[in-house]
Image (cartoon, rainbow, N blue to C red; front, side, top):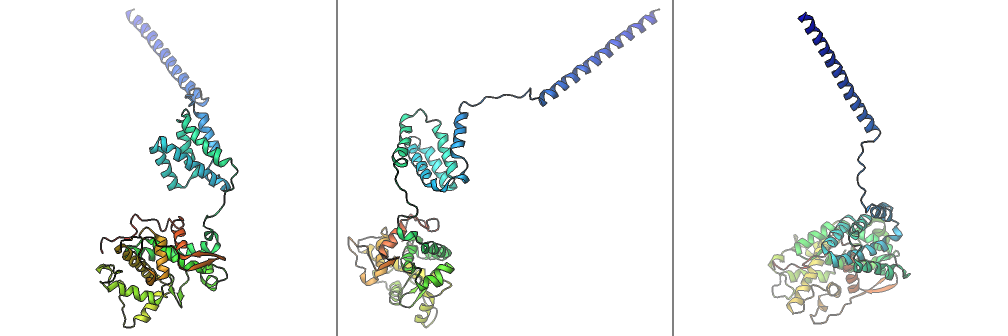
Length: 376
C-alpha cells in the first residue's frame, strides 16, 4: 500500500515538472519570437535625440554643396568672402582662423573651408560685432555692382605666350635649383632676370616664338649678340669670370666661388660659347646669371647701399651691365625697353612685376634669405 502511494506521488511530481518545463520552453520561445518581430518591426529602435542645431547643419550642406559643383564664375567672389571671414575670425579666435586658413591653403577645397567657417559661426551667432563685420563685406563688396576682372592685373601676364613660357621654365626647375644651391642666390631672383630676357620674344610674330617657345614649350637660346636663355653677352661673361678670381675687385665673391667657372680646355672662347648656347642644357646660362646678380649685390653692399631686397634694381643693373653699376642712395629702375604686344615695359619693371606677382610661386617661392653670405 505504501509502495503504491509513493508511486502515485512520484507520477504527479514528474507530471508537474514536465508541464512546468513545457510552459518554460513555451515562454522562452514566445520571448524569442517576440524579440525577433520587435527587431524586424523596429519596435526596439532607439529614437535618439535630434540635435537642436540640425537645421543649421542642413543649411550648411544646402548652402555650400559639394566642392566639385562650384560655379567657376562665382569662385572668386566666394573665395574673397571666405578670406574676409577668416580675417574677421582672427580678431576673435586667431587659433581657429589659423587652422581654417591652413586647411584651405593645403586642400584648395573652398566648400570644405566654408563649412569650417560655418562650424565656427554656429558658436558666434550671439556675437553681434562679429556678425556685423561679416555682413559688412557682402554689403560693401558683393552688392555694389563692381565689375571684377578675370586674369592678372599685370597685362603682359594675360597673353597666351606667358602661359607657354611658364610650361617651358618649369622644365628647367632642376637646373635653376642646382645653380641656386651652388651660388646661394634665390631661385626666384634668377627667374626674374630670365623673364626679362625671354619676354622680348613673347610675340606670336617673332620667329623664335614660332619655332621654339610656342610649339615646343621650350626656352629660346640666343646665339648672336647675347647668349643663352638669360642673354649673357660675351663681354659680360668675361667680366664675371675675371671678378671670380680678382680678390681686389669690389665684385669679388670669395674663395668658395673662385673656381665655379674654370674652363676645362685651352680654348676658353669656344668653350664659353658652347656653355651658353647649349640647347639641351641651360645650366651655364643660369650659373652666369646668378653670379652676375651676386657680384652686383656684393658691390653695392660693400659701398654701403644694400639692394638685396630690390629685385627691380638688381634686374636693371643686370640689364645695363657692370659699367652702369654705380652704387648710390637712390638707384633708378629701368634698363632697356621691351615691347610686349605693342606696349612698352622696362627690363626692371618686368622683373619687379614677375617677382611680386605670385606667378610660378609653387616652383620658385620666396626665401627668407635671398643671398647666403656665410661662406664668403
